[in-house]
Image 1 (tube, rainbow, N blue to C red):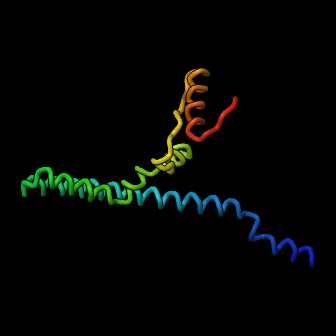
Image 2: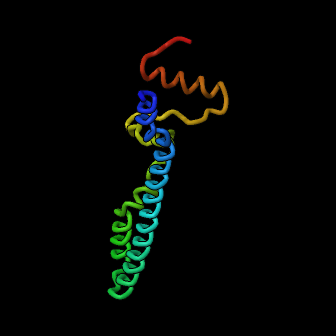
Image 3: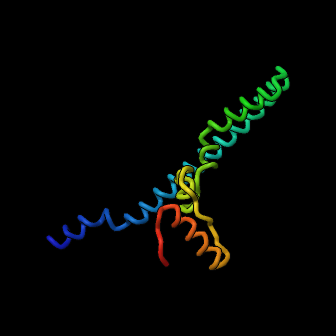
Length: 126
């Protein structure tokens, strides 16, 4: 009897991975559908703004306001979001620091650049 109860208590957990993966898939579907709806809404807002710019003859001022409205949408922010870790690190660097060149093509150029930067901080030696 105890063996049956021991097996029965674990029965709800036997398919937990399938339930977990199905829930992740469902949430991804909800997210993707929401993004598609937001893109459609943004396109409709853009069309409406263009129509109002033509009707009211707003010109550059209207275009500027339209771009501000469109950039404030959540979908635009997702599109502008950094996708990989390297770009995220590069964007967090402060502009008052001197950024080293991303690629030095040869060894002498690298040594000269390191010597120049070391001189600024008073570092000498090989």
